[in-house]
Image 1 (cartoon, rainbow, N blue to C red):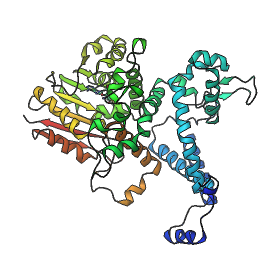
Image 2: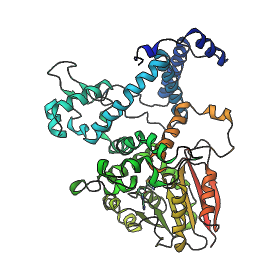
Image 3: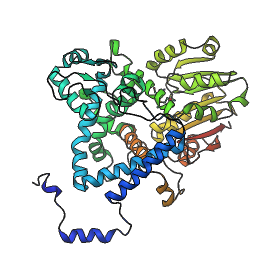
Image 4: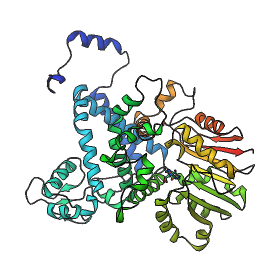
Length: 476
Ligand SMILES: C[S@@+](CC[C@H](N)C(=O)[O-])C[C@H]1O[C@@H](n2cnc3c(N)ncnc32)[C@H](O)[C@@H]1O
């Protein structure tokens, strides 16, 4: 068998010649990239300064983000990251870039997942340090395990040692671990993407082989996902799908813990994508006057509270699964009386017939997690409650371009790193739901398939926006 080192030997001369003839474009070089990076860095730092944005640093109290809503600065950072990534690939060379990646990507992810699962973040004070023995007691794991995990974590600049390499060393927060101690939303993101989705994603080859190999397209059956394959018996917890896991994993004081984490994650996503504005701009809510709205699978009510605050004539009912109720009630209790009286929560399975006749049904970030058959089923479940003229507002992440839209040139304009974020989500929802990020045309089709009496009246899907809004009217 070839050793890893042998695998990194340059190819034979003939093979190298063949490669050379394949590419005519000028290739980036180390020096060329270095110059570009220098220039991009200079432009970025100047823009940050001009816009009064505090730069991030390596200090524990560094700003957690470059807090600015300037799209220019955001894009400048993405372009710089992309070039830095190319620089790393080129410094490593092709073989080593794959070898290093394959070697580390899973241990890195597992390490972060363990730190988050056992809440190492709270085991170390933000303004001090903790010994391995103290951390081990706090997270309830053997000290040897704690030391080994933290050894890898510190290599990723997650936590740091007070006296690197010494037996007397203690652990302190670093600029990458401190934000996790401060943000439940960031913890929720790590839990959802690594702890819930990580193992299913590693089971994707087996699921694809079992259910989709040799077929013209991916199975659309939610019972044939990588998640379902992994969780079909008790080894990893027996759950039909992700929502079943979020709802039912944990008993006693842990009951509902995954839903709590998930609602924190949803709140975090809302902040990152400024989703409050997307929701309030999704429809002319003010034109409704006094009206009723149902926020289907509205989680802990964040959107409902925002809409009710901005539009005082609206009465909003949030529907979601039972374990979300306590999180909603906690948020609800903190509201002012007027707002509290206009927003309520009802446990409701969105696939059951809709019990409330409302003027508008908001369905935000729901359908992209379900295959076509379930998406159609959800829309049909509304029909018993729909009065002619009732609206259904879909707010969904735009996962791919409209069919036939945007040639290669446009593809090129989106930095590779952003396309990668989109395709990463697409693979994750393949593993969890056997679904995919759909173009806007797919939402129209799903409405028509659900019932011809849904008329898609308006679609807002600007190319630069992350979210699309589809408004349908029930013609009855
Ligand atoms: C991705 S979140 C979106 C939440 C919210 N609409 C938002 O945009 O923040 C999906 C929500 O669907 C809920 N959900 C999943 N299955 C459901 C079902 N069968 N009935 C009702 N809600 C469900 C989950 O509990 C979760 O709150």
